Length: 414
Image 1 (cartoon, rainbow, N blue to C red):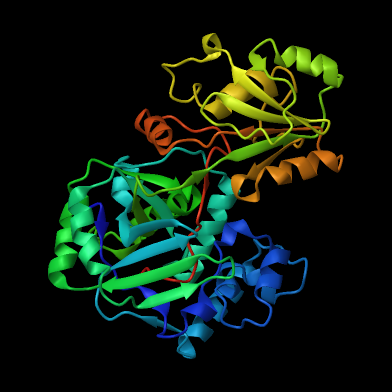
Image 2: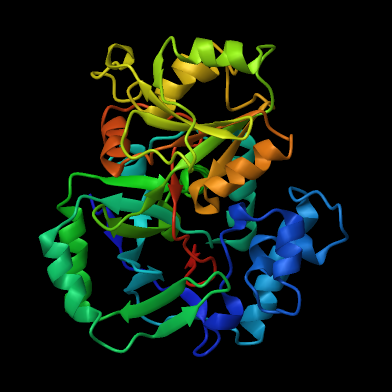
């Protein structure tokens, strides 16, 4: 089975990428998107967050929003802001954030491989979010949000990709957040064939970020198969937009927690209970950023503490329950603070590591939260172990940076 294949991408016309690219649709709310798109008529936010062009308060899941997204896409095509490549190809996509560099391949990934778990997932999805992406794909007849995937580093792929990046890039722009986005179009028949073979020889690929987008693509494919009895299996809807990075280049940041109250405990009683499962250091003068797995920082009443879970509390053989996030949940958040289901409990909030530990301090010092926890970042090896076991990661386990841009390349389902 072909895991990845080339496709004819829909992209900003030459010189227009800076006007078009936008943050992923799911990292901004409607108000933030509206502000980011001010004075930018060609921002891809007009497609990915089309409610910004409708009256404030419009339900972002209403039919009018999807129709407006289609209208805006058609307008950008008519004005020549977006153009379709004439020849199928791959796209080498490099992200540069400070000193961090990662280089991947934009490709159409196989829906059947996803269904057969050669493309592995590690998260549950929410039906409402899946429904949103299904409607977006159907109305646009295109996938505009790429799925971030990873694979075990391959010397063969590296040897194919590296020489291609020595050429002048087709796109080289820096987004508002300072992240640089570089793209090379690869449509040489020989290079395309070699890349296809190299990826098809892999045992599996892993979804890092974009589970709702991939699940929605599979639902769209299933529905269109049912309506097309003459299908060959090579239709565009049998593939979904993806960017594939080697695992040795992917950057995962910590994903931290804050809780609104101490579940009826006094600070002293809470600390005493924490010491039942954790070794607790004296209050730290500096921020207690975890230096290794099984270590946690805790911010309480203006003071930082270092927590180290006792080894007998770690179920080493279980790829999910041994994760730091699971250890904190099972030994502290649930039994002490009463956070039974972090997916639905309104007393807990999740803070991406890109915001830094100062954000944890701010949330507690303001009185909004009573206690906050800093975690060591989940490793990609742990993520792969969970996916290989067919298990699911706890919610809000991974924060990937830098983020992929929406609008740089889209996959049309013709």
